[in-house]
Image (tube, rainbow, N blue to C red; front, side, top):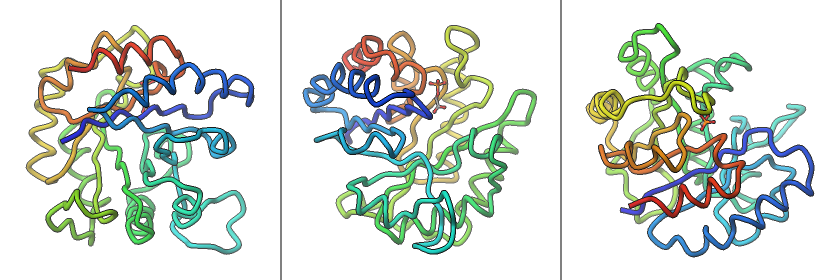
Length: 238
Ligand code: PGA
């Protein structure tokens, strides 16, 4: 199965000029990467010039249309040419107070619009990881049937991203060990039968640590904003 790398630009860069420059420096590598699906998860305002790449939204609302100022629906995302949407990122949960109930509604809406959601789960520093991940998976996936996770058909599938919150955006600081990540991978596998990827300060130096213990890809934040480092991260994947 193809590995998946998601460049999560978050709310960056802050001008179109910078975004075009960043895209210009990574697009050749993305095209060349035949064994890896590279997705760009950029702010919506930059989508129009991200040509010929797989797009991933960073969030969505659960209604299809209506009086919800500031929101974007899964149907709009699909219509704009994306196949993927990140749901329940820890920044959405922690900065915007998204609850598991909201995340569950977003997952259902994304699936019915034919998108592939990337559901993020993970514990904060000091929290009981298995208690948190177990609860998030149970509540977020509540009522969602995950039949055979048929990857040949479009839609109806979910990817889970394990992202220990304490290891996100540490840029050279605390990282999650491969052993610890592997334990959590096994824990998630007992509850979710599908593609599982890793996220948390991933760059060219550590990406293979996670892939070698069984993760099928990575969510890359900070390192995806540095063209040279992102290219290296893609190229170093075994
Ligand atoms: P990071 O972000 O690579 O900067 O830690 C990952 C994420 O939040 O998805």
